[in-house]
Length: 276
Ligand code: ZDR
Image 1 (cartoon, rainbow, N blue to C red):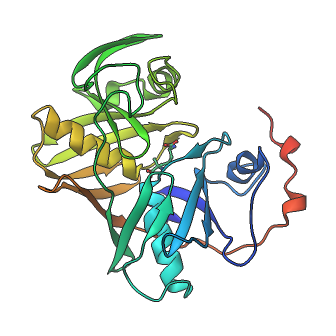
Image 2 (cartoon, protein in one colour; image 1 turned 180 degrees about the vertical axis):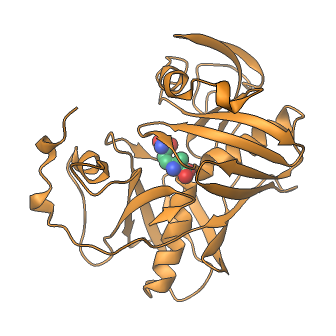
Image 3 (cartoon, rainbow, N blue to C red; image 1 turned 45 degrees about the vertical axis):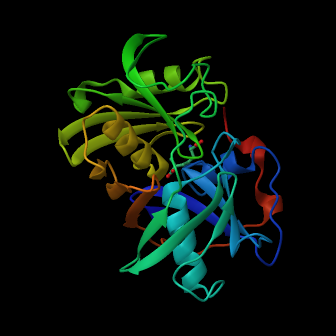
């Protein structure tokens, strides 16, 4: 499945458990030696919500939340009859998330409240990290940090085309200021309710879209006086509509789509095939 080009191998583990060994997500996500995806999503039964969603990055790390993934998960669960209602709840490491299908393959998701407390994001900063000067291997920038369950570091730039996202991204992702590493958003403001962004994802690299990242971008844009509370974020793979509501919750709306169904045997997933 994919959401705005952020693509996933979604494993339905509601009937048969799927607890992959380390390295399996790297193999499945590999576009040459595996299926090819930005993340592996695992759907499971939950005692606390309609379903549980786990998110594995290609490097094997487990993410707390995935905004584009949760839209795919709600579409999958509804279409395949796992849950027989348009609005449902998903247990994630970032808490209970509530997506709702709004027709035409689109979903609107209550992404919860952003976390701005520097230590909780987590960062090694104190208070809030808003428009903070930041030096890293290969450059310097002004950054704003937000957690949407997972950590994000937002950089506003004058011209997105000029930004070396492929080298700045990994340098910032692995900077010791971020104890659990971070996703990195490069953002060009086009107007008070429009931005263009590129995302370097923790554990995944450059992707075509990032749902939690789009939310973090709008929160950072509001906090720094650049954006209104409702804005569209254009990513390389599509457009997401984000609203930071007066009750402090962030809502995201965007597309989700099936690509194909397939089967693989876990024993055929030979992790050692994938070069480092
Ligand atoms: C960016 C993301 N694909 C989404 O849509 O929110 C989430 C994937 C997880 C991310 N790479 C992380 O936090 O490690």
